[in-house]
Each structure stands twice: as C-alpha cells, then as structure tokens.
Length: 257
Image (cartoon, rainbow, N blue to C red; front, side):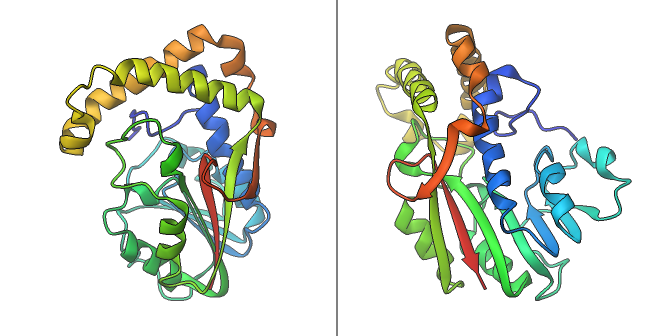
C-alpha cells in the first residue's frame, strides 16, 4: 500500500525536495551510530534503508503500512520488514537490538510514554536510540496529523523517563534554508489569516487532516513555482546539526541504555 498524504515525503516530487532533504540528513547523521542489529520504527517510503542497512548486521524495519519499497529490498539478506502498529513492539524480545532508529514518528504516537519504554525494552544494554521530531517552537501552524509536538525540555524529559543518558542536538539550515522557511511562513500566514475563529486549534484534528493535506500539497507546489531555483537547489549540505536551541527545525535525540 502506498500512502499519499503530505506526511509521507517523496524524493520523486520536486515540491517535496526541501522537506525530503531535511528528513534525509537525519539518516546521514545516524550513520555515526548504527551498528549490529538495528530496528527502524516507521520506515515510511524506505529511503533510509538504503543508507543505513549496509552498516548493520541485520536491519529490521517496521511500519504501519506496507510500502512499495519492500519488493525492492526483499532479496537483500540482512533486511527484514514487519507491518505492525506501535506501540507495543511485542513481536520483539527484550534486549534484541544494538540500535533503534525512529525519525519523525513519535509525534504521531498516541501513547508516547509507552513508545519510548518499548524502545528502551528492546534495546540491548549499551544500545543507542535515535529519535527525531519537529521543534514545536518553529512550526508554522497546527499539523492535525500530529498527536502532539514537543519543545526541547518536553522531549528530553519524556525520554529520560527510561533513559539515563540523553544528548539533544538540533537541526539547522543555512541562509538558503532560512529563505525557504520565511517564504513558507509568509505563504502559510496568507492562508491562516482566513481562520478568524482559530478553528485549526479548536476542531478535532481528524476533521482537519484532509483539508490540511490538500492545502499543504498546494502550498508546496506554489512555493516550487514561485521559488523554483531555491526549492530545487537545497541539498543535504544546506542542513547541519549543532547543540539544540529553540530555533532548530528538528530535534535529534541520542539516548543510551
């Protein structure tokens, strides 16, 4: 099953390039940590598997949906896929994995406390969990596909319920990324000015998902048309990780068991 919401970023859509590069940089950063038996929770379209699986002895990917990539990697002996909804991770025993990777997933999880606890449970002692999620302080509007978003201290406090060691990095962009962010911000403000009753925060998120998705797709295409060179030319090298602060785009948490 191929999932076509704006939450599923595609490398084949030019309008997705900026957000795709923003997601891809997490996998490049993860290469520093991935080893042994690795679990990816929420592998999405599977573009991270090609980057990380060569570094793992065994690469196990799970997702709520069965995406098209599963046939592409099915012949590689060290890759295994399971279609499950998490939490729990009950198909895996305690102390199974050396590394757990879960990027842009936790904001979609109803019981985030149980989610982190399950990650801790399936990690081996000494194992590493890598978690990314958007910085709420930099979000331009409510995303109804997200159960919640986090501020720095909120995410760190959540992870520390189970993990004693947590390092928080932030994802930042150079001037090109900042220019795109500001163009996006202005475009979103033009749309949200019509929400005089603040319905985006008052209505149940499920009611808003389809309209949000349609407007999000429309807005990305609009930004591509108006800023073609900028949208097309932003690459991995335009993003970088540093010590976290309130102005980062995403959090990159490194938790050790």
